[in-house]
Image (cartoon, rainbow, N blue to C red; front, side):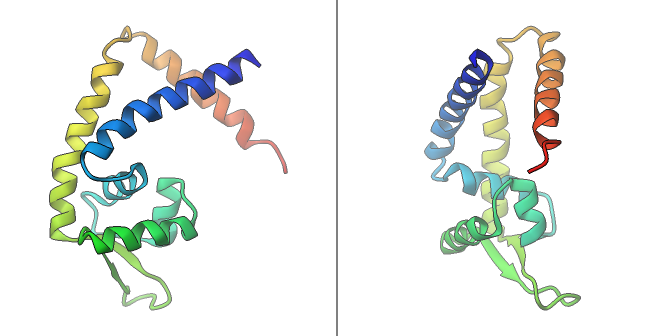
Length: 139
C-alpha cells in the first residue's frame, strides 16, 4: 500500500501547488481546465469537452454556467446538430487563455526543472503503465 499512499500524496502535492496559482488568476482548477482545453479551438461539444477535461457532463454544465457568468465562455447550437451545444471561448475568454495558460505552464515547469531530464520519460512510462492496469479492469 506504500505505492498507493505515495501516488495519492504526489497527486495531492501537485494539485495543491497547481491550484494555488490558478486561484490567484481568479479561476478554479476546473474552470482553468475548460479554458485551457477550449483555447486555440473553434469550440467543442459538451461531450467532447467532458472527455478531454475528465469531468462528467453534469459537472461540466455547472462549470460552463459559471464561466458564462464571467463572460469567458458562450454556448452555441451547431447547425448540423441542434440537439447539442458547443462551448466557445468569448474574446475575453481567449484573452484569459492567452494570459493564464503560458503562465501556468511556466509555473509548473519550475518544479519539473528540479528533476533530472532522464527522470521524466521513466516517470511518464510508470504512470502510463499504472493507468493501463486500472483501465483494463472489468467492472
